[in-house]
Structure formats: structure tokens, C-alpha cells
Length: 264
Image (cartoon, rainbow, N blue to C red; front, side, top):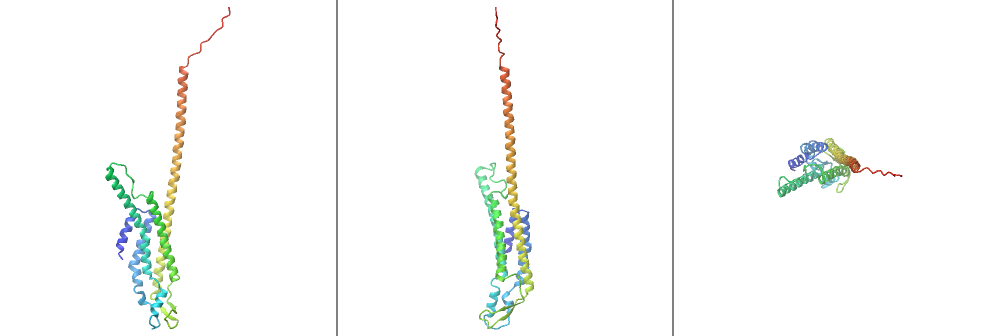
């Protein structure tokens, strides 16, 4: 697998992420991808070859191995890393779509025209929803694979000895897993890092939603203040207009002539 492509992809997402997103990317790179590539693949190696059973019955070894290891840990983690990074690719595509739309708008109306987006990478409108839904998808992928790992292997433990009675084994045979302690440590490590990534994605969702709610409340409060100031200004202008009209009427009014009754 070409992990350099995955690294370049996630590095492009880094500039569009929040602080929680950057920490998530660091954990994915250092504690998941690097550990997977450098150490985990070498620890597992050829699993079926190192899986030994104390019987020479043809087919018993393969059947017992398939019973205890229906899916390889390495392939399961590789699928997990691929699926968990796909939503980041959607964010990059959305930003690229915005940039292309902005470019076509400038070509059509000139460089001095009003811009469609103040910042194409700013999480507003559809990009905000794309980013939040990508976080939800990443949480769902990590949680699903953690559950699958527990469900398929009935826990995260690797016993030294397992007993197999599957056909065509003649009886209950003892099978031995190579390096069970080392595999147990790496399995628990990958599970813990997946849970940490789920927690970081949840914190980032709460941060984005809380920030959006704060902005909406602040905008509503600001609009109320503006409307209140406008109403006060209108009242003052109306009072000033009434006072000026009353003064004009008072200056234009003539004194009423006095009539006297003359009695002769």
C-alpha cells in the first residue's frame, strides 16, 4: 500500500482543520499509520505459517487457523485506516470545488467583481456540513472497527494455547499462537488510539456546534441591539420633527384682535 499518497492527502486537510482536527491528524500519522507500517506488519508477518498445531491431520491446521483468525488484524486495520481517512478527501474536494467556482466567477465578471467566498477554506455553509458529517463518519468507522475486532476475536486477548475441535481434526488438538504477548500489546494499542480518535472527533463536533450556536446568539443579540438603537433614533427624530413643527406654527400665528363693547 502506498501510504505516501495517504500522508499527502491528510496533510492537505490539515490547513482546513481546527485544533482538535490537527491533533487527530497527528495521532493518525504517528500512532496509527507509522506504528502500522513500521511495527505491526512485522509483528504479524506470516501468521498462518507461525500458527502451529500438535497434529499432522491434513487440513486441520488450516481449518483451526481460519476458525480463530477469520480476518487478519493487519488487513482489518488497513481497511480501517482507509475508511477513516476518506471523509478528509471529501473536505478537500469541497474546497477544490469552491476554488474552481470562484475562478470561473472571476473569469466571467472580471477580477474586480464581488467574490463568492471571502475564504474558500472557511467552514461556512455547505463546507461546514461536509466537515461535521465527515467527523461523524470517522467516529462511526472507528467505533465499528473496534466493535468488529472485539466481536470477531471475542476480545482483545491472545492466549498462548487454544484448543480446536473443528473438522477434519481427529480430536481436540492444541494450537499455539506465535508471539501472543506482543500481538496483544499492539492490539490494545491500536484500540486505544482508535478510542482517542473517537473522543477527539466528538470534541471537535461539540466545538463546531457550540461555536456556531454562539455566533447565532451573538448575531441575534447584535440585531436586537441595532433594531433597538434604530427605534430610539427614530423616536428622537420624530420628537425633533414635532418640536420643529410646533415652533413653526407658533411663529406663524397672528395675535387675535380685541373687540371692545362701546356703550353710549
